[in-house]
Length: 128
Image 1 (cartoon, rainbow, N blue to C red):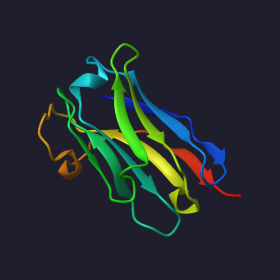
Image 2 (image 1 turned 120 degrees about the vertical axis):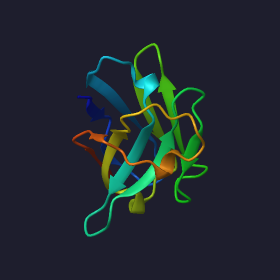
Image 3 (image 1 turned 90 degrees about the vertical axis):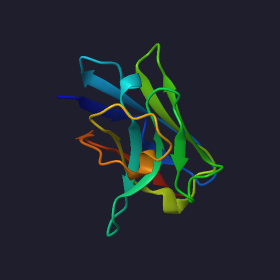
């Protein structure tokens, strides 16, 4: 069973940046093995995928709202996956979750996977 832990959320002003981290607390494999997605859910809205990264060569997908502002990346040495968020807007306010699919996937459509393991979430609030 893979357990994920997010960190890095907080309160920022519009235009500022945040970097979220996703770590594995228990796993026989490193996070490099798993396709990882960052999702968010705002109050009263459905959960949506923000960005994801495939296993292996690490193809990435981004929601239209994230393109050009957010970057998902891996730090293999630290066994982490990051979501770097820049130019934050009030509409980015949500609980952000990282998730992993149980199987190795190095394709180009990580946003279509059924993610099996989820973290507890970290709150991001963008407000002046």
